[in-house]
Length: 355
Image (spheres, rainbow, N blue to C red):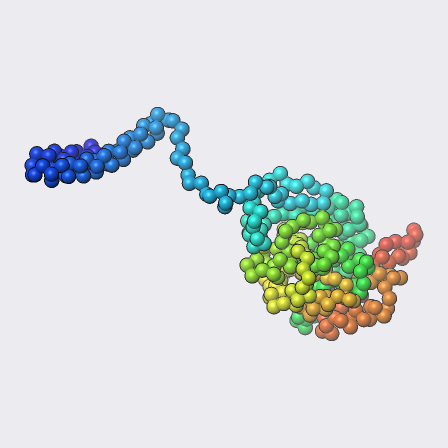
C-alpha cells in the first residue's frame, strides 16, 4: 500500500471515529472537514493513477506548458542569416522579434555565428587579389606592398610606432581607389599562414566595403559606438576566408566625427591592437580632405597608406593630406591605376613607397 493510500485509510478511520463519538454538532463539523480533506487527497491519488495508466498503456499524452502572453510572442517575420555576393540567403533562418533593439540583434548575430560567404570567384573577375594558386600580377604587386606593412607591424620598427598593427588606408579625394586597395591588402594578408586580418569599414557615411562585397548586416561600427552593451565580438564577422574577418560601418549617423573621436572608439582601437598578437587591422577610412573623421582615426593608428591615382591626384592635395596625418605615423604611398610597359603593351600596376 502506498503512502498516499495509507493516508486515505487513516483519514477514513478518523472520519468514522468522529461520527461515533462527541456532540452531534462537533461530529458534523469534523465529518465535513475530514471528508473535504479526504476528497482532496483522493483526487490526487486518482490523478496519479490516471497518469500511471496512461504511461502503462503507451498513450501519447503531453502536458500543456504555460504559453507566454501574446504581447511577448516572437513576430512571424523571418530574417535570413546572411546574404552575400552572388549567393542566395542561407536556407537556415530564424524568427525574431522585430521590436528588438540593437543590443538584442547583436546577441542574435553572435549566438548564430554569422558567416559571410564572399564570392571569391566574382572578386577575382573584378580584378581583386585571388586566393587560388594561380600566379597573377595583382597578387605579386600586393605581396610586395603587404610585406612592408607586416614588417613595420611586427619587425624592428614596431617598437617605435603606436599601434603598429593598425593601418589606416585613405586618399586625398574620393574615387582614387582606397576601398579597392584596402580590400586587396586584406585579401593578400589573409594568404599569410601566421597572420590574421580584420578589415574595418570606417567610412561610415559611404560604406564602400560593404557595398563592394555586398555584405548586409544590421550591426557595425557606429552601432557599437552608440551602445554600451554591444561588445567588440558582436560586430566582428567571420568569413569563408579563414584568416579574414570584417567589421561593417553600421548605421549612418550625423555625429560620425564625434563617435569616431569618442573614448569608446579609443578603447576599441586599443582592443583591436592588443587582443590578438598576430592580427593586422585595416581601416578603410574616408578621404582626408574635407572630412574630419579620418584625421581623428589616424591618431589611433601606427601606419598609414595614402592611395594616389596616377595622373589624377594633385601634388598640392597629396601634400595637404599628408599634413593631416600624425608625424610619428609610418606613411606609405600606393600609386593606383598605374600603367607601365611590360614588353607586350601597357599593364595595370600598383606601387608602394614609404614617405
